[in-house]
Image 1 (tube, protein in one colour):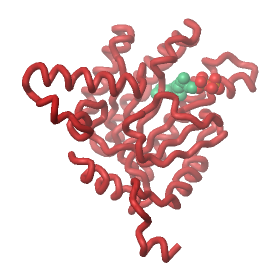
Image 2 (cartoon, protein in one colour):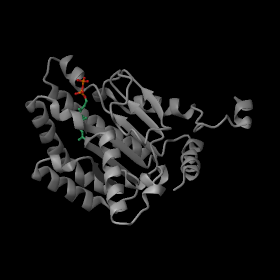
Image 3 (tube, helix red, strand yellow):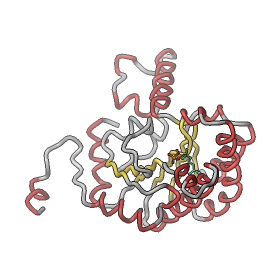
Image 4 (cartoon, rainbow, N blue to C red):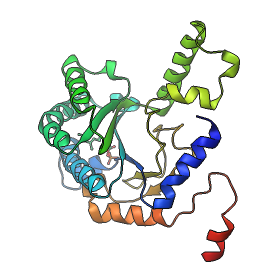
Length: 256
Ligand code: FPP
């Protein structure tokens, strides 16, 4: 895909005013738990309910792709007890939710350095991806052991391997030629990124894919995220003017 095609493709989403692809940094579980004098794992469990609410919301609003930052490459540095609790939660969530996700025609995928996980978790992730691969109503990308720099590095490595194998010419390796090697190359870039929890940064999430994404930051802690909060974010997005580096459309500019 050329850069020009990517732009016109991205533009289609904003005309409908509903993001085709919503990405979320789910932050604030720890603080939510602390305010209730509970361990951080209590906040992560509450966060799982907000994930469920968000998936249901996306199905209702006909959002085609939802990408969640569930565990970053850096999260491995958290205390062993918290990492263990999160792994346990992912395993249980998979077992508990997969039937309903499949019934709702959700395609579930896990994006990240999956080799870092236990065999039990990898087996479950693989089975869930395989089982739901044919679903088309919503694609749910769960980013785990993921970092935006990791994604770009793995794309560069795979492109270098293809060049060594004589499949591509290194001289022709531009943005459009590298893009297919990135994770999630088969879905459009996110139209809207929501970050909960009050911080205003990207934290090594989809660094390449967020180039023209609209950003929405809210102080709401992730476990408190509900349909009203999601409506607020989508309303805000609907009023954004997406220009992708171009000048404003003169017709739209006169009308506003
Ligand atoms: C960030 O909050 C949250 C995480 C590192 C984990 C996110 C995981 C879930 C929402 C659990 C369920 C997910 C799935 C996909 C089943 P934080 O701990 O950094 O919060 P803090 O900034 O308040 O400390």
